[in-house]
Length: 228
Image (cartoon, rainbow, N blue to C red):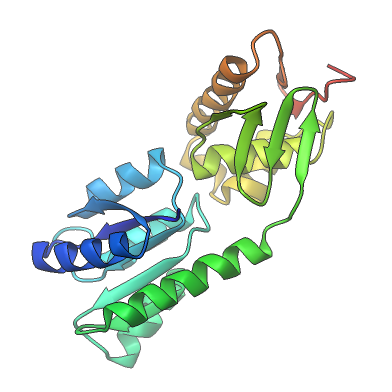
């Protein structure tokens, strides 16, 4: 089941989009403004975002730029305007697609499905295994036996990157450049908090195991089972 975030300040648009996508089997989350959208995206693993351009306060293009600091989730813009400069502005901000209102719900779902599949096709396939811990890169799941742990998109990306390079130390700057994709001055503390959540979730999933190590004044490394 794909998880979609719908962001629009028009309740009628939200209701129609939500009802149709749920009927097609999607899990749907709602946000009526930029603050709600960013809050949901920060704490939830998403497969795509449908983002209205014209919202009060921070508009959809600005929200897209913020999301692109930490996520590669597909973003589809909706707008009452179909001018070329508006489409270009949205795509230049990091959007993946743009639809003008009014639009076909059938076409909206089709475009979402294609964008999501393309993203999954680009992701590395395979499962990383370290003792009882399995990290499924294709399904983006972290498991121990039949038990799974819920990671946000950014948390999973950080864990997967470290696990694909076991026993190597990566500095904060390297992780920002390769995973976070945001300037260092945007908050070293944010990364430390995120890594702390990753470590806590791993410890709850695999009690007694310590997979992620903080190397003082250097960064982090993922310790494989045989070297942990």
